[in-house]
Length: 279
Image (cartoon, rainbow, N blue to C red; front, side, top):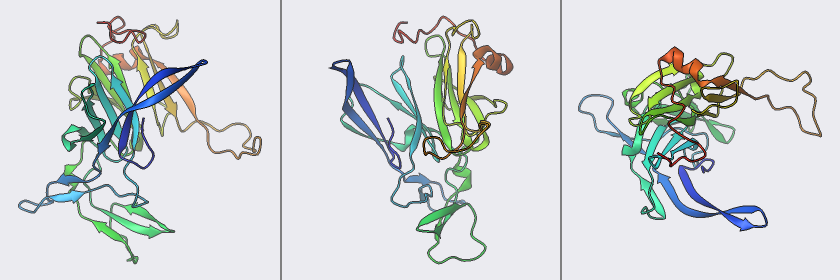
């Protein structure tokens, strides 16, 4: 699980607590340093200690989507303004793990860029260019735009794994900043395979995929995506005292509709979600 405004991920163990209830115990905490070393902006210049801009300086860049490769024991974690991490898990790890920066396998495009934090009503507004009119208290941070990745536009949100044979398959990543989804090789997530969009869908926070048949409408697997740009209801009047605060919906697509367009595999018999460790 993740924690708002903190660069940490907790691994929890669920257990039956009796009377039909489920509880949990903490197994370990994965800690991620919000400060990164990036090359200097010009040849021969010293390296830069870079951290993402945030509205509240005491906050850390937070994590969003998590996906665990249940066959390989690997955690994939999406950090909004940083990118995607790949962290091997095993029972021998200590209760507190400091994750090295080398585990960041895909950076957001904005990673490493210089920024300006402009005071704004007790917080900061983050800009990627110097404000036209100087504002007292503005923080300017150096950076190197070439340190960023090529594919993911902040915020990086949901993650899902499509299982193929053995270590084959795909990691699917939601790039919320430009409403796209990106397909990476499951075994080597530095290998970007394809990108696609879902018509009428945007501001996606999460998605999931399953390779097995999911009813007669989805005989070759199912891809489900949250749509943050859903149409509003017929009435936006308050309900039970609560004001209307936007609409959402889920869109369901047959996996083969995506796979056929992108020349991806359709593997219906290589993974059983009810018995994920069965090879």
